[in-house]
Length: 147
Image 1: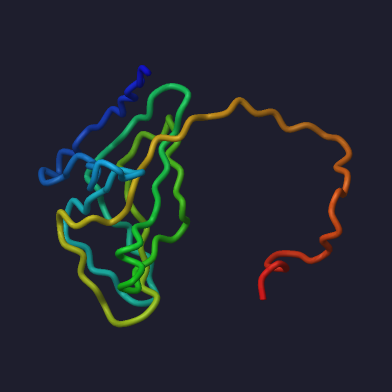
Image 2: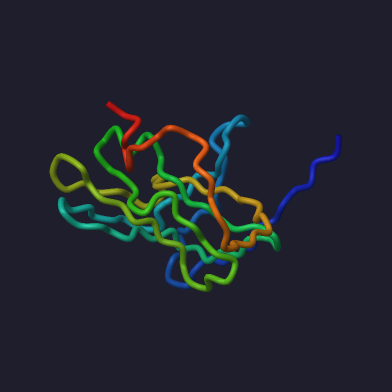
């Protein structure tokens, strides 16, 4: 079986000499880890855009998806707007929006893993007007299947 390797073009930002290339933590990892390019202070009640120091371009027919790290969530740090989408034509540095759910200020240090990234294939899609038939007896709205 032949495997095609997708290449993501990366550029280190000139003011981020310590920016690290995304890496997989283990052979079985589903995503690549993204690292903070510099120390970042997370304050309660605020969203902090943590720098990766990288500009990226996904291969044709794909886009990049930024996902939270479970290890940060156990420390009360969440990624807002998760998952995040990096469009192929986004030309700026990738930053990770993080916030604190509980506890006081936290410092993330340069080189610390702050998110995960993966390449996602695009699916050609067209939306069209038409009739959508109801084929279920569900009547509740958002969150209606939970307790």
